[in-house]
Amino acid sequence: MVQPRIKAPRGTQDFLPDQTRRWQVVERFAREVAALYRFEEIRTPVFEDTALFHRGVGETSDIVTKETYTFTTRGGDDLTLRPEGTAPVVRALLEAGQLDQPGATAKLYYLSTPMLRYERPQAGRYRQHHQFGIEAFGVAAPEQDAECILLQLDFYRRCGLGQLTLHLNSLGDAESKARYGAALRDFFAARIDAISDESKRRLETNPLRILDSKDPRDVAARQGAPANVEFLSDRSRAHFDRVRALLGEMKVDYTLNPGLVRGLDYYTETLWEFEAGGLGAQAAVGGGGRYDNLVETLGGKPTPGVGFGLGLERLLLALEAQGIALPDAYRRPVWVIAQSDKARDACLKLLTELRHAGIAADTDYTGRSVKAQFKLADRARSSHVLIIGDYELEREAVAVKDLETGEQREVERAKVLELFVPHDDGPH
Ligand code: HAM
Image (spheres, rainbow, N blue to C red):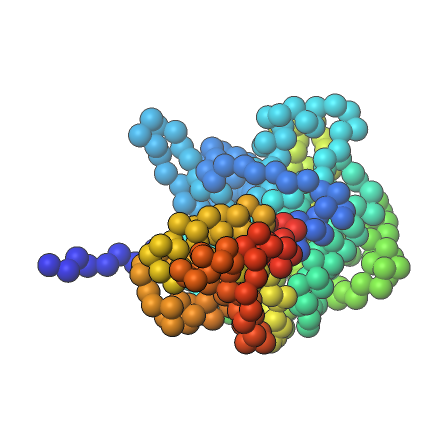
């Protein structure tokens, strides 16, 4: 009986080689750009204590109230699959004692990190997505905000992504945020009948969240809502002005967007989001901001922080939609064919020597004909085919066919390796 097949869970994706090839290219770019800015990699577990996200991301955020995968283990621990990367990074640094010294700084990135959110899947929105993110700790200066934005932009540019819009806003410090919250509460309280039931609740818990509600009633009701820049303290305003001036200095275009609040409660001061053309509704290819109170909220000493997270699925979708081909990272192999049973050992030896010399090489072990193997070699986009048969064994030689020119010649066995240039970072 044929067994029924099991499908991948809703909202998740598999990436087979025609996709992972593209992932590897953007991952290489991410590492290169991060290294240029001297950010170093951090990896944290895929699940964390549930309290981390409640305290870190916020009890009133959609991510925590509606989207977490939370479970109790057999041992009774309350755990949550990581929905975002910032709170875990803070937790890890605190646990390692790296933010304990006064004036401590840290510049970290994470790459292709799976994030799990129980969202309604649609194009560009998944229940598991992967982020490239960076987090910079210990620097309150606006230069750090600008540097993060510039790093993000450099990465997109290196990938070839175009049609980018940078949305920029500032929530200000805790005091500005509180004043703004109160103003929004007054504004929406006067329109209580026009807003959604959920936003009626948000009015009590966090009126800022009404600004990123997708409910059409809330979208209509927030017309004319006060803009937060009007509530910034002098210090926050000066910080924001400086970030804007720095971006101007670096020739980075941006749009001031007073409606940008982003979905995580930890943000303070500068907020930003990049949108890319070609994506439809899920156009946000990455966003970030400052979170100057998060480290303290999670039990550390007051330590400013700023960073971004960007979705790699959306980046790859946007590149495709914009018709941008990534550079081909595929290393063309050489294909080795044993023309007789006697030649099999010699082929295996040659194959191993090639690989040890850093040259990608492949063969067929299933007994296909020479003709069928040439087809395989073509399909693998091989540069050359190396054939060893009884004749070549006798002459201690290899028949080398250049698949580009079609030319075939005999090469001394001892000199075959010299024909090829090793791949500097190993074969792909
Ligand atoms: P976020 O805006 O929630 O921020 O997510 C960052 C990016 O991840 C989004 O702009 C989007 O590209 C991608 N993304 C989010 N949800 C999905 C989804 N369901 N499917 C596909 N892609 C998605 C954060 O997570 C913050 N931790 C970023 C940050 C780091 N802020 C400061 N440091």
